[in-house]
Length: 239
Ligand SMILES: Nc1ncnc2c1ncn2[C@@H]1O[C@H](COP(=O)(O)OP(=O)(O)OP(=O)(O)O)[C@@H](O)[C@H]1O
Image 1 (cartoon, rainbow, N blue to C red):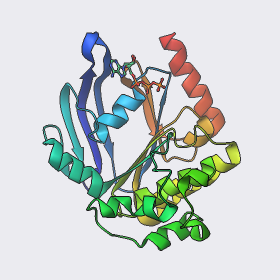
Image 2 (image 1 turned 120 degrees about the vertical axis):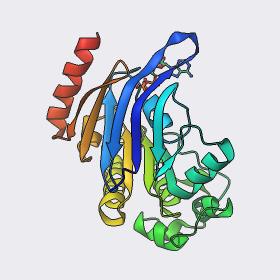
Image 3 (image 1 turned 180 degrees about the vertical axis):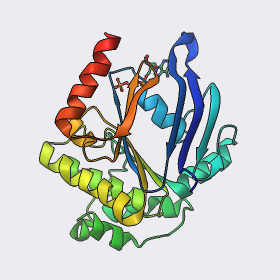
C-alpha cells in the first residue's frame, strides 16, 4: 500500500547556509504513529513542515496522501492540507473568542470535508459538555483536546503534531497522547509527532531519531527509558 507520508532524499537549506535536513528519506504507511526526536536544532520541525507542505525542500521529493506536493501550487496545497491533514501544535492555534464547537467546525466552514459530526468528535475527545464555551475559558489540556477534535472532524489521512504535550502536565499529556493513539488505531490516521519527551514518544509505533538533519536511527519505538538512552547517545555525538 502506498505511504501516506513519503519523503525521498529530502534536503532543506535555509538562507545563510544552514542545512537543516540532509538527504532524509521516510515512508510512513496508513495508521502508523511516528515520533520524531533529536537534539535541539537537529531538524525535527523542518522535517514536519516539509512533510506537511508548510515548507518546501531545497531538493528531493515529498508525497502527501498520495499526491506529489514537491512543486504543487500554493492554492492546491492549501486545499490538500485542509482536506487530508490535521494539525495539533503546542500553541493550539485556536481562536479564543470562538466557542469550542465553532473552533472544531472551522475546517468545514473553510470548505473542508464534513467527514464526522462536530458533536461526535467532541464526545470522542471528552468535551461533550463544553461545546458552547469560549475556548479562551478552557484549560491547556482542554484546548489541546479541541485542537485534536478540530484535526479529526475532516476525517484526515494524517495528523501532524508538533510538541502536542509540551505545555501540559504529565497526566493531561497522557490523555492527549491516548487520543492520538486512538486516532491511529481506531480511525487509521497516520500520526507524525515531533517531541522532546521520551514518555510521549513511547506512545508511538516508530521512533525516528535525527542528528544534524540526518536520520540517525529509525525503528520500532521502545519504552521511555530506552528512548531516553538512545536520544542521549544520538545527541552526545553531536555535542
Ligand atoms: N527559518 C529559518 N531560517 C534559517 N534557519 C533556520 C530556520 N528554521 C530553522 N533553522 C535552522 O535549521 C536547523 C533545524 O531547525 P529545526 O527548527 O528544524 O530544529 P528542531 O530539531 O525542530 O529544533 P528544536 O528542538 O529546538 O525545535 C537549526 O540549525 C535552525 O537554526
